Length: 399
Image (cartoon, rainbow, N blue to C red; front, side):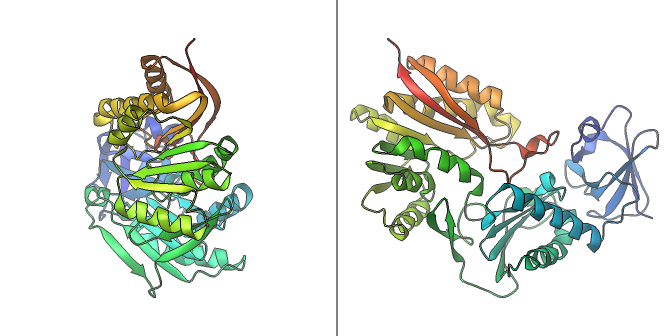
């Protein structure tokens, strides 16, 4: 029998609401023999069975739940079922040529992310218990894909995030199985990209903005477009492909800009898109001083906060870039702006944008609100699965 975790009376509120985590301060006792990473059975304070998950006393997230069935064996058959369900969901909701195939808690496999870039998998494992199951999960992914005629030629691991240290694990980056060329070419919205799964940010490419990139296209025909925090040029290239008159993409990463320029050449768009390696916080005031104006400005910054403790600083950052961007938008032009931090709630993000608009005497007309692509599903009650907020506004001067 597995070890048992018993909750304190009145605790486990997130779990009971449908969440996947139990924090260390919610636990009354752990009984039985176990090692960190082992599967345990979870009971409420009165002995009522809550399900099973893996325990790690090195982490503030002490238990990550795998099932609500306390008698369920967490074996290969169970993993196969979880993987098949995840793949079946994506076949119905998104373009699966390149997609996030496993999204951790939202696919009921907590702590692991697997991205599919055509015939290559990139895995990120962030929790000790799921790390032990990683190879089995990948084997089942390959089996499930093979039933649809998809043969995976290589797997690369990007478990190099600092959060692994909080789980008592070392960071790791490297091949799982045979080596292959880590520059993988994909196509999204008709745009070709060379994805560097070894050195790119996260798993190499941000798949979560797939349909948001497509959404800005209708605004960009014959437009002057500014794409801030362009990373590898994805929004900029969508704007150019949609017929923009000119596109300026900016990012502080030399590696990102080099990749963006390569992607422009891949699509024959290098004559319409210019990329500059600049700090956006410095660039925007300069463009304002030069009296440059744009028909469309896109803000796709990295997460300004990764904890509740730094939310106030993040608000200042989001307010600054949004008010600077609004000053650069022509009267009646458009601003696409987003936040990818789940600590920056939709309400707080909207409030911050509104404050920025008031500061520069602009009025905003909301065109649409969007979130992450459906291959990054939002599991209600698992707050960490909802992180991307994406607005498109028309920016009007006060008269």
